[in-house]
Length: 88
Image (tube, rainbow, N blue to C red; front, side, top):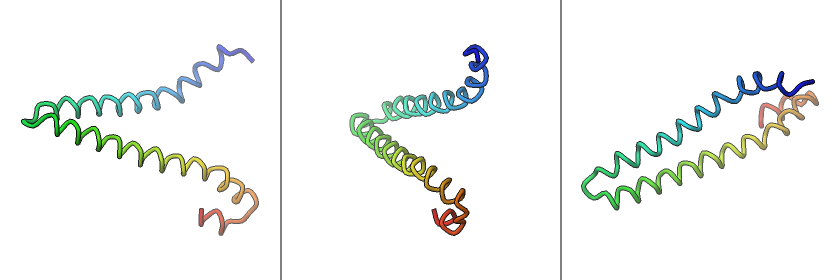
């Protein structure tokens, strides 16, 4: 199988994720620019940065836990343990 044949399907799957990540980065930049125009901008920039760090830590932490559940959930469902799968 040629790698060239795999590139279009891969891009079809990857581009929405790339655009989503770029959107998150642009959102942080726009937030920083907007907060920088406030009267007490040093305190506002610190608070905005802290808020972004806390949000990303929580979002990535929960995302990591959910990614870890994929294997356990799939195994429970495949073994016909539907109660365990529903609980997970």
